[in-house]
Image (tube, rainbow, N blue to C red; front, top):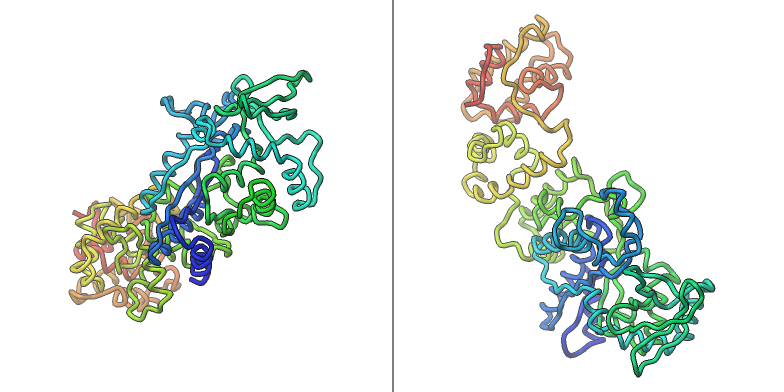
Length: 515
């Protein structure tokens, strides 16, 4: 992972002694989505790599909860429009609890980070502003306001609007852009022009004044001594917010901007736009940590460098992702890169959760066992994965918990199934019934250790004698077993079913169950 080595070496060279601070952050303006996890995982692996080099390092995550509530997200009632303009930390949570809307959004994300084994310190911007932490940045930036304006205009290549203000003022519980007039550092007040054009004063040491975000970001770097910070590619465009932050850091705060680690977005497969918290177009971060084991999520993020856009598919793509990771673990000839990816992916994982049984097989066996974990193990134990059941039973049990969540939340209808309680012979033609009876005769005489390949060959051997087309051999079978025209791999599926039950079902012997 050359990008990681480059960042770590640069950080150590820049700061040869002391603790190296790696920072992430986001505005809790809506439910945190999968894309937010990429930033915090990048931070985590940088800290891990630094510690591996013998350096002190720490990850801090900034919750920008003093940001204004700018628009009502799709998952909130329209009545929340009455809170527009209020700091997110002051907007009430929609669940009726005593916490803020900011906490309502951030708490599940914080729990997701913990599930991923990420160690971090949380910093709430409203606490920093209201405690006076930002006072030096407010004073410095307003004292050097011409330098700040010049940096923004020169680097961005655009002239600031005449209404641009370096500060936001708290008025009646809402943040307002107001024309800045002057600052009195002796009494810690700012004078500004009200909406009515009158000059008035306000204290700036208790959170009633907030810096414009173009000044706030580099001010934070300066006050917190941030050495490394990842951020989305939208901030990394030429003349964008990071570039202006570099100039403001230099010209206003006499500081060196942190080492940048820009990263590409994560899109849903087929989508051209990044995930959005406020629009509700993202895969929720807290949901994905229920559906995917931590090491698989980290692997998804780390198998490519941050500058590569990622595409996430909750259905077939997820199955391939889990199996890709399982294959990586099973490979005995790991390269140095493989070892590093496995080490960083397994960070914080106490109990292994990925077995050597293909995910699709677990899904089929679990459903065929009606969600009974012990029965699923018994079913898989009758297949070519019998050794895995003997050696990895506890791992499989843990993985099945994620299979269960996936089936409930994201699995496509084409994959979900239940064994039909009963079947009506009248729903099948004479040709189809004859085929099923013939198949039943062969299954009843199948070797005890017959595997998926044996059953697949058995099904396909009827392509000429049955009078059915090759595809119909399988669709008729699925109709008889699960009441659908498609399903899991037929050969393997038949191999996991109780033999007596299967024979009776193929003979259409009335009501049956799997007990």
